[in-house]
Length: 297
Image 1: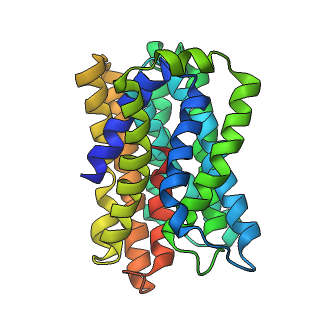
Image 2 (image 1 turned 180 degrees about the vertical axis):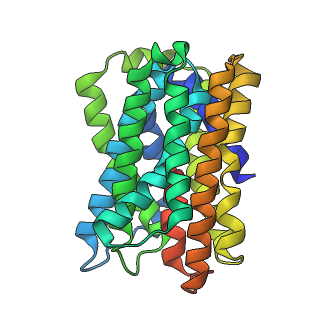
C-alpha cells in the first residue's frame, strides 16, 4: 500500500503542477502537513540546530528542486527511477562524511544504479529534458545530505521530525514561490476539487500515511524484510505513468530502468543486512534514513 501511494504520487504531482505553480503546490502541501502534525511538535534541547538543518534540506530545498523537475519533465516514469539514486547517493555520503565502510556488493549496486541512469539519460527523448533530471538529481543529493544530518540527531521521533519539516517548509516554500513564480491567486480561484484532492493526497497519503506506515512496519518487522520492499515504489511509479499519462518508454529506458532498480535493490538489501547485524531491527535510528529516503515522493 505504501509503495502504491508513493508510486501514484508521481502522476498526481505531475497533474497538480500543470495547474498550480510547482513550488506553490508544495507549499500548500506542507502547510497541511504542518497543521496535521502540530500535536507532535516538540522542542528538543540541544538537537534543534540539526533538526532545523535537516528540515531545510529534506523539505524546502529538496522539494523546490524536485517539483520543478517533475513539472519540466515529459515523463514521470523516468523521474520515478532517477529519484531512486538517493539510495546509493546517501550510502556514498555516509562513506565520505561518516566514515562508514561498504564492501564489493554495495559498491556493485551503486555502480549499477548510476550506470542504468546513464543508459536512460542518453535516450533521445530524455535528452530533450535533461535539465529536469539534473534538478531531480540535485534534489535527491540534498535529501541525502539531510539524511546524514538525521543520523546525528538523537531522541527526535519520526512524527516530531515531520512536524518540523512541515513548519519550516511551508513558509519558506511560499516565500520562494512568491519571489520566483506567478499566477498564485488565479490557480487557487480556478482549482477544481481534483486539484485540491491532489494537495490533500500529497500531505495525508504520502507524508502522514506513507511515512507513518513505514514507522509502523519498522517497529514491528525486521529491516531486512521491510527495506527492500520499497524498491517496488518506483516500479509502480513507472507503471502509473504508462497507464494514466500514456507515456511511451523506449527499449533503452526500460533496460536502464531495470539496471538502476537492480542496483538500488542490491544496496537496499545490503543496508538492511547491515542494520540487522547492528541490532537495528526495530530501533528509531533505522527508521529515519529509510522513511525520509522516500520523502522525494
